Image (tube, rainbow, N blue to C red):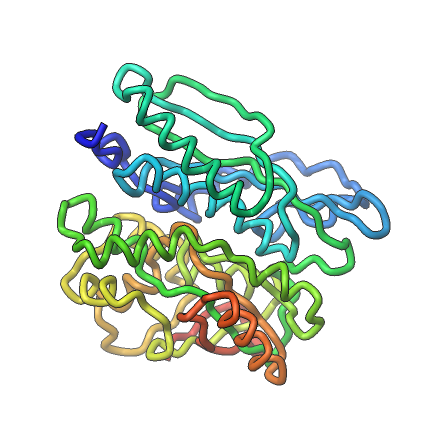
Length: 346
């Protein structure tokens, strides 16, 4: 079991294996218009983190699914990371999880049963931490290992935190350090240090629980999590949905220490270039910005941090919630203003 390297089976690990934003848009462009339903509060219209459906005056159900190929070689840690990534979408909408279903695809002829059991056990451990059951799921025999969850949660229908409700003048707060994709690129080459690996696992297995706390803060206007489309991609979703422009202070960005050094050495996943090619036309970079800096901005995050937009007066309170829940990298990274839906990096 210890000789199995899960990442050797995956062409792209974690959220880095997501379809590029521009390709996804093209695929979905000719999808038929969805049935209008007044109780569907959040659908596909703004590429939000989950669907939300009103059940009654005080309850709405949140539904999401996330799954991917291995980002690490350890089966248990892979399961933990995938489950954390899926459940965090519930928190990103301001809700709390209630149960999950497992999504399992495994190359049965290549992986020992114990390895697959380890992956499932890792996912189960995260659900146990949250206090929810895995109530079922579906499995297939697939050429690459795939694991994730369908996660369901609840939220008050009047308190849903969407990615298209930001206000001009809002401050941008990011909850986790960047650099997961860069570290995963180094890991796949066998060049990630033990310290880097520990930083990577610690970040990707940290549930975005502040979202459920911030749901009651009326000065928190928008919320999303930063995953496969990177900081720039998910910030652009906020800008487009809210019809606002964003400004990001590159020097203020939180970056995992080992990832910063790797980025400067030129490590980057292929998905970073695909991300830039998809949305770079809506980004203004400072003259002379180094490639490693652009790679950080486009770096696909697996189980990344919450990106919060809030009124300036609420910043201290929002940061306090993050710090109280162990998010040491949480900080202000920029602001929103009236203007064309673009991101300017300073």
